[in-house]
Length: 321
Image 1 (tube, helix red, strand yellow):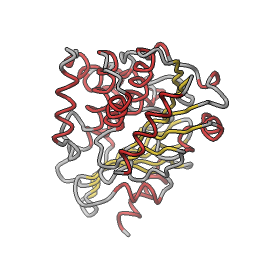
Image 2 (cartoon, rainbow, N blue to C red):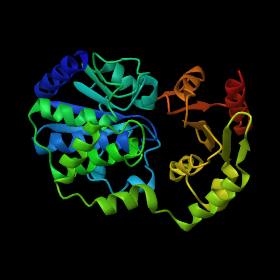
Image 3 (cartoon, one colour):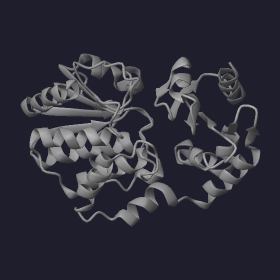
Image 4 (cartoon, helix red, strand yellow):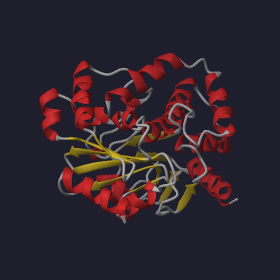
């Protein structure tokens, strides 16, 4: 009931606002970016002025560049310093907003849309539902509360968020509600084959060569039922691949039959990005929170300000303990 009440409050705030400022977390994934763009497109379709941005680095992974509305987003340095109303998407804590954190703190009203159980509820209105398969699900509910009909471009963005966070409808969060929403979205004659290829299947040959190197160095530790791998800055430079291109690499490691926990450490400008996946009873969300990160029981991550080796050792020690 609290989620419903907060949805009502969010709808009223958006309806009353002159300008809606939208933001998602740094290095946005499919759910964060799809949710942001969906509401941005819906605002525009209703004549509601909106701006949409995410913190630098400004570029997005190649497999999201087909999403409608991306060309109408705003650089982070042009985002309003004191938004009248600000909405954040898929962002579990305010610090994940990077350089947009100050704007969030200065906002007259701050609406948080998220489905992470670890969300710190940093907004004045917190639409946080850990039972929702994706933040995109909450965007659809919010649009219904506003009485705004979906458009085909918005439906495409919501579908992208839904399909990425359910792992193409293969993860345990794939519920009857998920299939019902997918059916509604598909009625907009979405180019599902094209969306699927862009999100999951199309990669540059250079990326495939990098994957071969990384998988060749992957380590299986039967005692911990752990498979681990690392993407180094040397790997990225040698193959001419950006770290954002490697987002789906961990899904290849998840295929390991002998592993119940998967970890991938990647050297990035801000530190070592550590992605975790659990295929059994291990709660990797709790593990990530202990490292200053967050996420879900079966999928989480954190950033380590040290070396790749140190990051992997932290995970091993946590699993051993």
